[in-house]
Structure formats: structure tokens, C-alpha cells
Amino acid sequence: MEKDKEVEYLLEKLQKLEDEYYKLKEHVRRLEDEKRFIESERLRYEREVRRLRSEIERLRSPPLLVGTVSDVLDDGRVIVKSSTGPKFIVFASQYIDPEELKPGVRVALNQQTLAVVSILPSSKDPMVYGFEVEEKPDVTYADIGGLDAQIGEIREAVELPMLKPELFKEVGIDPPKGVLLYGPPGTGKTLLAKAVANQTKATFIRVVGSEFVQKFIGEGARLVREVFQLAKEKAPSIIFIDELDAIAAKRTSSDTSGDREVQRTMMQLLAELDGFDSRGDVKVIGATNRIDILDPAILRPGRFDRIIEVPLPNFEGRVQIFKIHTRKMKLASDVDFNELARLTEAASGADIKAICTEAGMFAIREERTSVTMLDFMKAIDKVLRRSHPIPDLKGVMFV
Image 1 (cartoon, one colour):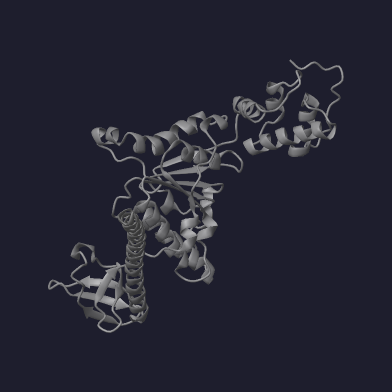
Image 2: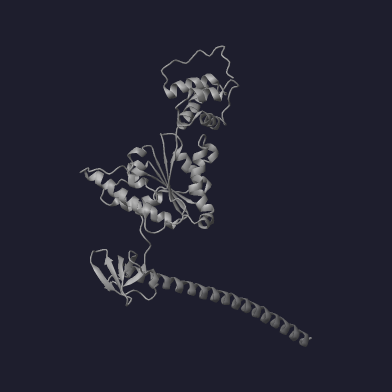
């Protein structure tokens, strides 16, 4: 009996020891997990401390000076012009590719030794980047009426060299460098340029000539230079200069500083258009209403190789333009495009668009959903400001 009690006691004690063992084992496992977590946290904090120390060292380091390379000597030293003014002969870092050190390149200089430590990207005026058209215009050649011949010419001069350059190489001729569009206002010059931008995959850079006219001496010429530099970097690209006569008028002997500055800007434009180096896949399209006042130097071959007249639309052209601008309108059965084209002789494409819009406004004022011939007649009289009154159309049949 006593033996059984002793065995039972020992079994209970063994069970307690096993329970204690498992508790200690679980505690050890938790401690090991905590240890691994603490070690990972320690490594993370050490990395953070190293990063912060390097950031402190970077912030404590002296600022770098900006300079421009003037020349590269045979022994590897570089002549740089500091932003403070004077020129220095300095050494370049061994980590800089000597091929990249060329005259005109912007570099960063050590403040103490003035050694070249890195090459900086070329600086451009933020205004220049604003000229680039990010989204392609939604104008297509189908939206332009009465200019089939002009569309063919501009496609040959701008699109074909970009899409099939091998044809020009095989024939042995250089493709046209630039195209000049001229004609009365509202005939579709800007529309043609937008359609070209829509059809090509090239970067489209749109500039108005007056934007090159700046207050300070040399600023306009710098803008012209940077626009063409941007076009080279983004090639293939198209530069569209609207209202070209703002900076390319005939040179005169004017004594005003403003006129002289405009002439300096034009000279830079002439140099960029002509240039000793090839402009590659950079095409220039100019547009003007006053070709008669343009300087002869900008009209000579080699700058604008193709000069395209964009005249007022003829009868067939006016019919096409009316159809283009009314294709989304609800028209009454009495609307006759031939009669409208006859009544709008000497009207431009912009005039016809305004007539269509105004005719729609007449219908809206009377709360109608369709536009009638009478609405168009009223619109023609209002837009073209005709002196004779609108004829009485009652009982008149339009064929």
C-alpha cells in the first residue's frame, strides 16, 4: 500500500516536472522570438543612424559652384568660367567621362579647389518647356475643307521626310527644312499645323512670334536658341511659329532699342533656321498674314524651302467647309449648301464657322432643334455685315 502511494507520488511529481519543463520551453521560445525581433530592430536602427549621419555629412559639406567649360587642355585639365566671373584652370574628377567635357557644358565645381566634380544638365527657361504641346490636337485633315492642294504639299514637306527618309536618301536630295504658310486671317493656317501634329508622332512645339519679344537685351535670342535645342533633344519634332511677322519683319534703320532687340532675335532665328549643322528630324512650320513685310533673308531657300499660300476658299471649298461645320447639326430640309456658298463669296473658313454657330444660336433663341435656311441667311447678314437687307424668303424654293 505504501509502495503504491510512493509510486503515485512520484508520478505526480513527474507530471509537475513535465508541466514545468513545457512552461520553461515556451518561455525560452518567446525569449528567442523577442531576441530575434530586438536584433532586427537593432539592425534597422543602425541603418537609420548611418543614413542620418550621411545626411548630416551631406548637409555639412560646402556648396558647389556652377561653372561653364571654356576649353579642355591636352593634359586633361579644364578651363572653366566660374559663376562669379573669372576663369580658372582646374582638374576634373576621375569619375567624369572626358568625352563629356566639351566647351559650353555646365559643370559643378568644388568650392575650395574649383575642381570639376560633376556635369550638370543644360539649363532652359521654364517658359521654353511650356511651348511643348503635351496632348495632340484633335484636328485632322478631314476637318479642313477646300485646302486639298495645300494639305498635299505640307504632307510632302513635313510628314514624308519623317515617315520615309530613305526615299530622299535614294534620290539624293535633302528634304525641305521648313514650310511657310501665308494668307488672309481665318483661312486655316493654324488648322493645317494642328492637323500635322495630329498625324505625326513627332513632338509638337507651338510658339507665337510675339513670345520671342522680350524686355531685356539677348533674352529673345536665348529663347529662340533654347527652343531649337529642345526640339533637337525631343527629335523628331515640329516647331510651329505662329504670327511669324512679329519677329521677322524687314530690317530698318530704326534707332529705338525695342526694334534693335527684335532684329537681334530675328538674326538668331535666321542662324537656327540655316545653321552649319544639320537639324536632323526638326521641321519648322511658320505662319503669317503679312508675307509682304517679312525680311527677304527669311524667305530664301534653305530656311523656308516651301512657301505655301493658303487663300480664301473658292466655291467648292466653301461648300466643303459648310458641310464640315454642320455635320453635327440638325438641319432642316430647305438648307442648300450651294446657295450658302454662293452668298458667302470672299468669306474665310473662320467666317463660315462663325456663320454656322450663329445660325444655331438663332434656332436656340426660338427653342427649335433644327436649323433652317432662314437661320443661315440671318447669320450671314450678321457675320459678314452685309449692307443689303435679307430678302423675303416666303414662297421661295431652294434647290
